[in-house]
Length: 319
Image (cartoon, rainbow, N blue to C red; front, side):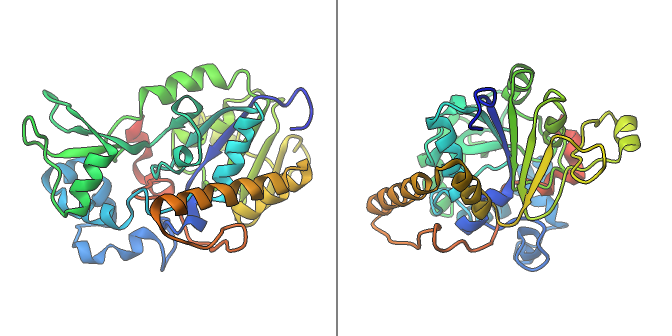
């Protein structure tokens, strides 16, 4: 990253970069989102993010959204590390599976982002004949009033622009993928299980000479060569074989991984100062005081209805 030929970096991020913000993940046996949905009386946990179920029964989703709504959380060290890459002219793009909008809160602009699974930032009427757009503040007011959001024009349900099971990924995902990966110099992959397609296949889009750094609690993205070839998913991560030459894994908490990387680059104090300054600004705007994640990194997990690893079951429907 300090070398002149490592100036175009793509970050691929998932639920793990938001854990220290206090946002639950999906798969943890006791603290994960799916383990705590009994009160909504769903036919099965994944139904809360299925578009067909949502159109008939939107109430469980909006009840959950109130608990996990963007704006109740602060960006983490990981988010601000990505912002630092942008400020230093190193960030080509950040591809995120999260829908919590924390990348935007941290200071990334829309052009810096590919929100692969959508976002809470905008909402639309679900009626194909209407598709009226609504703002984040409009949706927030409805959710916190415990009113199912209805379109002011046609009275159909209004849904945040997050990708449910059974919906296509945003067109921007595919257009940016085509233009970005041929020129990337370094992939930094953080906080993702790399189990959800087509997002997981992005690691194979970079040139074979491009280094790939994984910052995660466990090694992931490793594909059996024969299986990968049969399924068209070549380019899996290779950390341990004798032929390994470009993949490196830093295992542990994502925030700590970013701090360690920043330290190696001589950016640690700059990163800590950025986090401290931005969190103080958020506190001033909200009138609240919360712990600084540079000193307290509680390993919880990811975003509001963030469908990171959870989308694996029906990932191919999103293509």
